[in-house]
Every structure is written in structure tokens, then in C-alpha cells.
Length: 183
View: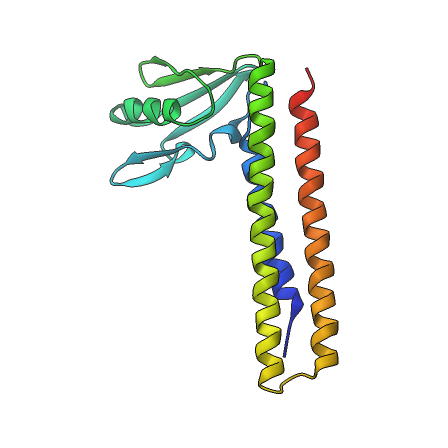
């Protein structure tokens, strides 16, 4: 039997990942989730910064990272510099300070393009899930588990779910763009 709910859940997961990526983009205020996408190569594996040290926000434009192992300080520094966050770490022993600079017009436009491209990738993932659902429907039709009318009605439901999810992505993209363009 065909269950469109499982495909809807997959699309929800895709949007969840997309939202997490969006929250990691900086808007001019310090935010611990900005560092979520930065991975550091320590102990032979890629680890997020929050597993190597504690992240605090002492003031609106500053992020402090207290690294637990002094040997990892340089590795975290290098990972932050390599990321496209545009942050410049300042090392003070085991403490790394990340001043969050004011967004200039050029960086805002850059971020807007980045948001659009992340949104497009998310939409492509959602469409791939739709394609997967439609292929499963065709297999069920071929094996005579469902009739043509049933296949068409399921196809319409899957398309409606897809449209809703894509609309949600577009809304998130436009609200994040507004947030970034607000000075």
C-alpha cells in the first residue's frame, strides 16, 4: 500500500535541515548556531565546535569559545578561518574570541545569494522525494497493487504535499533575506 505520509516526513526533515543551515547564517548579531556548520578535524574525525569547547555569547557582537583541550585551539582557529563565515578569531590561551562585524552592503548581497542557493538545493531535494514517490506509485501500478485512478489520486496528493513544502521553503528564504537586509 502507498503511504504519502512517509514522503511528507522526508520533506519535513529536508526543511528542518534547511532551517538549521539558515540559522547558521549570520545576520550581524552573535549567535551560537552560526558555528553549527563549522567542523574541526580532531581526534581523527570531523567534530562540531560545541563538542570541543563551550560557546557563550557575552555581548551582542561577540562569541566566546572556551576550548577544553589546549591542543585543539589552533585546529578550531583554522576551521573558523576556513569557513565562509567571515569571522576573524582572536586567541587568548584556551579562549577564542570571535567579534561579529557589522554587515556591509556587499556581504549582505553575498549572503542573499547564498540563502537563495541553499533554498534551491532544498527545493531540489524535495522534488527528488516527489520523484521517488511517483516511481514507487508506477511500480505499484505495474505490479497491479493499485489501479490507475488510485495512482492518479496519490500522485495529486504527493504533488500537493510537494507544493506546500516548496512554498514553505520560499517563505523561509524571503523572511531570512528581509532579516539580512534590515540594517
